[in-house]
Amino acid sequence: MGVVRIHIAADHAGFELKAALAARLGADGHQVVDHGAAGYDPADDYPSFCVAAGRAVVADPGSLGVVVGGSGNGEQMAANKVPGVRAALVWNQATAELAREHNDANVVAVGARQHTVDEALDLVLRFVATPFSGDPRHQRRIDQVAAYEARG
Image 1 (spheres, rainbow, N blue to C red):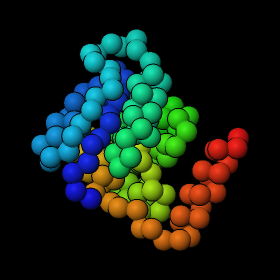
Image 2 (cartoon, helix red, strand yellow):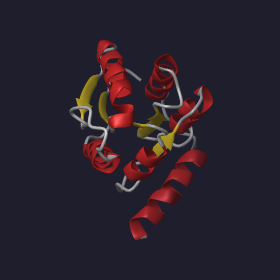
Image 3 (cartoon, rainbow, N blue to C red):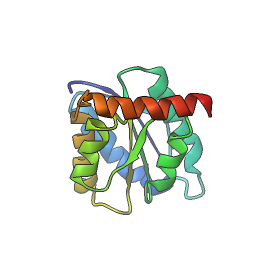
């Protein structure tokens, strides 16, 4: 997919993994924009960080987002509240690739307490490297979800 601007965010549970992901993505030439947390705070809350990253992705066409927490579930839910975000929780190689290939997901959520650093790096790198297939049946489904999102 080439060089991509990547908006990244994590709460305390994903703070260390976020740093590892940002370092690797930056080393690979991607432009990483950190939306917090800026420091480790065991009492912080993920929604504001994930919403900020999601809003940045929507405002920055062609960019992608990475949100990290303990499980990735809440982070995915928070990011998906931003209109235009298609956040996917990934847990194996297939879900990381299919999120992009079939769903044109623009944000990936990963659980820091669910994977080793190497496993999480692999998932995120696969997500970033996989393009949307452009298959009309997948685009049709994405359009249906977007239409529902627009009308409520």
